Length: 370
Image (cartoon, rainbow, N blue to C red; front, side, top):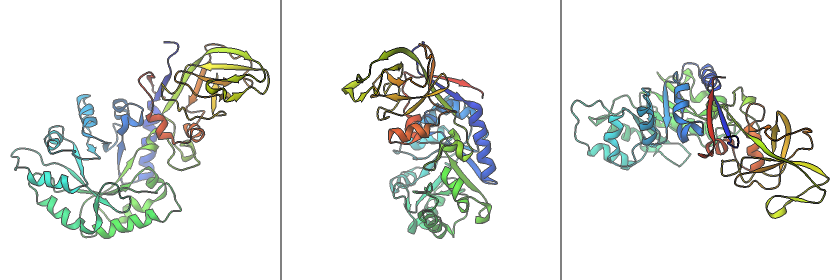
């Protein structure tokens, strides 16, 4: 157990982040997006911490099944909708909302027989306003909306939604263009709107504010819920949110290595002087990024240090020259409250979401209420 990499999930941070989202969102309803196993934090535990959210967003029906099996009774939206006709019955059985984004899904719904005594399926209709991933072309959305409302098995209160492609770039006009396209396409249609993601919440108030004139607006928040930045060059803390995960391990070796000797696979890093090297029990087998470059920071017993050499499957090597007295057993923090995961992501050439979602089954997850 002493060698185990440890991911501590701060439930209090999740709750406070959700409360902060509500402050910014004003009158808008909040969907807490818990896909990808709660962005790597654990689906069920994140859902428990987000009990005050108006809905939970999952990527696929299987996640909805997991949450219902765990006793969760919140409104749950399956963001990819049904993948095949047989999913429709399961969506109804589990009382899940479905995003409808493709003609095939519309055809499956139209082919259903009227279901006496069954609650109509709640639907979110996705409009492609410029992301060009999922969604119906905006030019035909009025007709599609009418077809959905005419189906006997569909709830009449259809939520209209879209997805932003570049909302994290506050100076990029694409988001304003997408908002305008959405408003133009849906001007004749009644019902709730759901445009804003995490970055939309921070940078594009027109995507969710009451001033849009609709009876109800939603924000769909993923990264900010976990204290992860949605803006390049900033950490989640810079944006007023707390990291919900601390990843840590321990030193299992401390040794002296001479000047000119090389560290790790392929001997890519050479000691510039006689120095102390630590070995910590974590690697890409745990989800720590193999692409992390020498100089990527860590904390050893709370003091700053940096990795050297290549990340291997089970181990990293650490320059301990700035941590005199470091010993086997000292705690090594890979990211967390005192070391932003965004900093590690930048050194690894990726994004924070990739790192938190990448934890493997070797990592022991524990919860605290802070």
